[in-house]
Image (cartoon, rainbow, N blue to C red):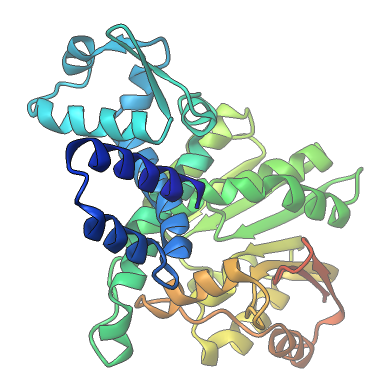
Length: 358
């Protein structure tokens, strides 16, 4: 609000100096400023612009190019710019948002977000921004027509790699969850269904260096990412990655596992197939073996993050609405699991861990 008032006063001063009779114009500006809801919308607009700037500056390589500062000519050369007017436009936006600074002829990073995204370990954060600007945005943009029957999005296979990357943000608390499930000594044979980046397997190994097993991933690009990660972590000899759908491979792993993890996976299984899916997973476990789920569940009107994900899920072919926690617990019990317990990872969040024992 202060920004708008200052703008109004500046306009008033300028107008008084140039045209003392332009009072009607100033009054119309004041009426615009007083428009109900305008301040609230404008307040939300700036973070939206910042999100889009960070996306563009990351995708184009601008942030990495500015880690040590650079002139416009240097940026044109580094980024292989063919349309300098677009570079000028994004630089101007960065300055306006105070994400960039300009001293003399040298542009540098100024904002904390830009500085973090220009580091080598910011991939998960970059993936969050990419997801919001691309397929999250697309779900809202096409919401009205899809709600009235237009075809759902058909690009689920294109977003898996981004999902796997930003899922790494959950590593700290999911790592603690995994640690609570695994004996800290003795061999543990496990399977991570829908293994994503492979961080669940790494967390299991950290909890118990004798843990081993497999990750299974249906998306070939994501599976390749997991294999590369395991190699870089020095765990390729402890865990292997299989490409495919566990529902078609359950017989090959019958009855030999101590732990099965399936994180952010349930909503990829059609609702009518979930009882069979849970029964198949139970058949893979040794007696007293554990199935561990971690999932966003229905928001219940309190969790905006879960509600947002649910809108995206409902907008895409090949995925379902977020499941209801009580229904999942009942299905697990009906499939023969016992000692079914839930863990809420964060206050006012519907992201829960669920453990069930064979």
